[in-house]
Length: 243
Image (cartoon, rainbow, N blue to C red; front, side, top):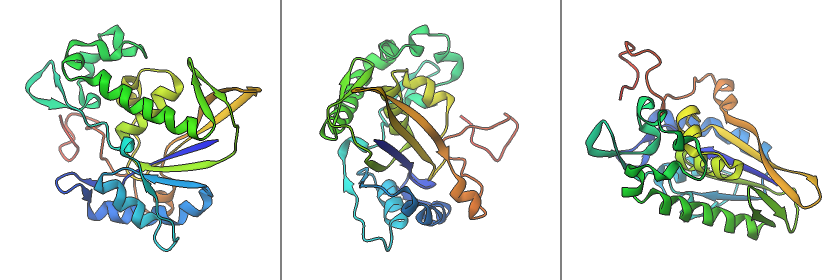
């Protein structure tokens, strides 16, 4: 089985849509979609993901099904350095989260007092339970840190969604802390992330990432990947995002 996570195009968060650049990115994604040869397509309930899917699938006759659990994992947490407003977990300062050993633990990362106060574990469980229920419907049952193939298949499924959600899904499927992916990786707008099952012993399944944040369709169209989700490469780079 293959899962393909497609991040939305460059976002305009004010209107939950796409910027002009995001529209161009989504259109460049369109020629790539047929090559995936997917069996099913799903989309987040958020506007920026829906708009990306609409542009990428235009003319294909495909109508992706909306799944509520594909929404962005944009629950807010009070950072140690900012008690006035909440921040998504992947915007925490590295100097604060990297000194907490539990943040690297797949079963303890959500035990930080700020995460407990924000109810992050409950939101995390709701999302991962929904993901596992989806996979069970498609033949794979969670079994500890692996999965059991109750009906092994070669189906390919495409999700149009978000960076934070995709990171959380990868962390769950690979049994690692999402903080490591949220903070250590960045999937650019319209990038494609692919996971496949590996069944080296009959019925015993692990997931493996064979492609992360791929933006080859943008380079093929003469565009550089967007900066959304990243922070300044050097603090003195005034034209790049600062905290």
